[in-house]
Length: 148
Image (cartoon, rainbow, N blue to C red):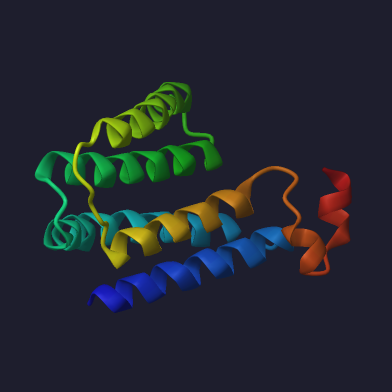
């Protein structure tokens, strides 16, 4: 089940970014489904896998919660949902707290492969949906990259 959700999330991210790069319809739906699959993957498998990797409960819930909140915030901004400004402030606070929490962490820890894969998918989703990204140029759609 875990591999299925991860593969589905990865395929949705790639399809959504290719559709968005070429300005095709359906890109937003694919990106939203990718975000939901990423959040579901973290909530269903990330907590358990990180616990098995040896992360303390508090840090585990903070890391998974941070990734879920950041992904949710990105989806809200992408869809221009009302109230996204408040969610963006929460995301910024989490981004500020994340390095501090990791610096204060006294013992060494390792995160699960599930968490690393989810972070990779989130970064791919984030970079692909930024304004002025170079993806349209690589996919042959120079009109949308020149217009921005």
